[in-house]
Length: 359
Ligand SMILES: *Cc1c(COP(=O)(O)O)cnc(C)c1O
Image (cartoon, rainbow, N blue to C red; front, side):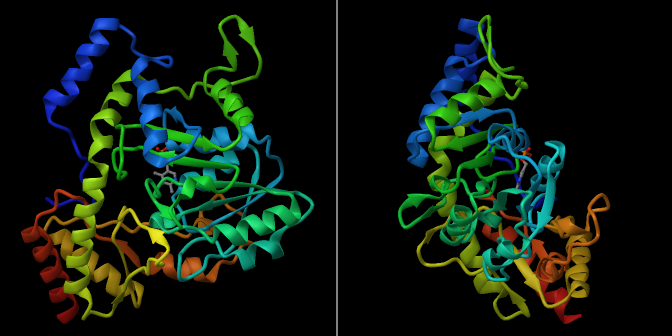
């Protein structure tokens, strides 16, 4: 069976060496030495000043909303993983959906402005498939209307624009290190902020709001463990190689599939891309369903990602219309994509896709 992704596991001995360290100190969680080491190495790797390792990418989003004290309406994207929307609802705010730009698949800044009301407190956008949002335009709008900006950067690990980390933009960026992501710690995530003051606040919020006996805020448990940090420390040194391997796989897919009625995202030249996913866009939903079924018959799993458009979720007010997102969500399929995929497997997948179109 070929799945849409395959989590990388380091050689067992590498992980075991970290386990021995944990056994020698019996320090399992609560800002242990491996968590601190991973945070330090991630900051160096990404070229940023503040980063907090948390238990997952969803709690990272919730901590971001909480730390900025957001209320009322948050303008967000309908084309993302469901956690982007549910974290807004979970924090007692209302998601307001602005349609996406069909080229970059991220929120369309031109659609944001029209939706701003007195109740709007923030913009929450996703760098979809690692393709950056229109960060300059969003920053401009946020400044004029005095709004906070949160980027869901779950797909954007290692992405740079103009040689600068994508996580330098916005008030807060959040990451997911889930087992299915490019860089993973089994479960995990991070919150990245520019402001030291806000960073301290989030540090408190993720650990019950207290330091020792002194209590400051009503926090939550968003901490992560030494075992998860150990997985991250094993995987991080390999990420640049993974990105290169994935780039090569993407090039093979593209050359094999370019004759078919499919389109692919265009990565702007100023972007240093991370090849986190390989989405293809069909001309219609029926063609997608046929290919997906034909691949599944051969135990090749693809994923409709993202589907449905989030404004169509059953618990969302149906007043939102996002025709671009709704259309793209019906036609996008992510193909199996991970660095361990062999040339033989890629060829088999491409041959089956071509056959499916020819029948
Ligand atoms: C994976 C993902 C999340 C959720 O992250 P978890 O670590 O699974 O909680 C949120 N947003 C996006 C865009 C994601 O891809």
